[in-house]
Length: 557
Image (cartoon, rainbow, N blue to C red; front, side, top):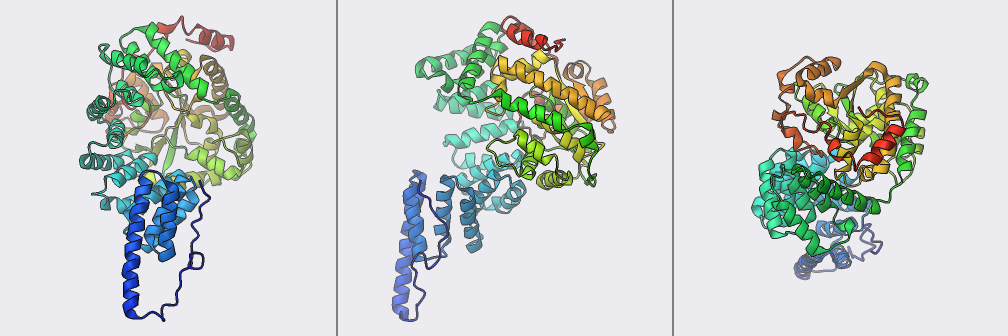
């Protein structure tokens, strides 16, 4: 890809501004000719963009700007080129230039919002899309893109009507169908999602991710879908790393049918395939845990200024994935004084930014050490500025990202005296539930039993550190106790959080708020104990994990 520049000016592109020597007749002819040329270049540029011929798009953009230096279409095409070249700063410059010249250009606005989203400028994304979404009614492409950007910034409820409209305009487009189905799961429209995935699989029976998403939506009651998926495996004959989603879907449906041996076989095939391409060293994750324990001690916690209280107070729910964090979030968020903002990475984002450490990793030990010496108000203010666009009138909001457990020291210092919820679950159920779940690359340790054991031992050490550091501020909830005695445990939890009991917290499955986690289907159901001790169906296969955890002194209950 050429190193394209978007810094065009009249001198660079050779435009003559001396129009006095041109008579009005010739001037009008030239304008007409120029307009025709620009239209032709625009059409050619858009056609080239559709086939991803960025060299031609760049030439068309330069051609337009050579003829009319302040033409918004030239800058728009240039923005597409910079976007394709993965140069977000230059793409932003170009799309912002378009809107300065022509504020009605909704296409540039949505493209700009997409670039803002990449930079986690979420509040600006929400404001920008809010201004332009009413102009998208006849553009299925930009309806779909705007909806996708809304989803990226944690607003699937705003994405849903846009996806619906895009699908209504062009129901034959598979991308629009797939995005509609995914969002339908987030907003609780499970029946709609199933029907759309059925249609997608009817049109493309070998699409592995759609098979996986369809398998998630309901409990299998027969082997029909299993037979379809195994036929796909035979006919496509792809290498294991190309079958990851299909392996996990097959494991899930075999488990639904209580064929435990076949289920584990496919979960293991999926985990082995993911591990083979993960490019992962578990020592990197363990080093972050060890650094948090080292840096965030009692003396550090008590040192420094106390931040000013904010109008809205965050309640962080942490733990391992698949330990009931989403369930607990839904229970508490059903209270009239609480809303949930779902899973955000704003704590990590602010810590990384304020550390001033340059690294490719999202978090590194050097960042934790560096930011530990900074004024904690930078974290409080930075986080609240990032999250404010999501907040409503409720005084408490939940941020439920399991990995925030690594940063509880900073959270505790930024919001002193506020409770933090830590979910716990039987170690074997927690580990195996992660092992059989596709997390893309968010939790790479979960695809290998050996890595799971090593990570869990480090995690257990981290939990003990936070108990000693935070004392009663750490509100621990045991998943097995919660599902066994819902009302008593819910009342006790709300009391620890300073909230009065409300019946809605017991009826959490009626909560219509969207959720975009791996548990987005399960939390629409009433509470049950069906997942307790499920690992015992795989006791033989999981014996290596049992041995490693017991050797580390971890009680398996």
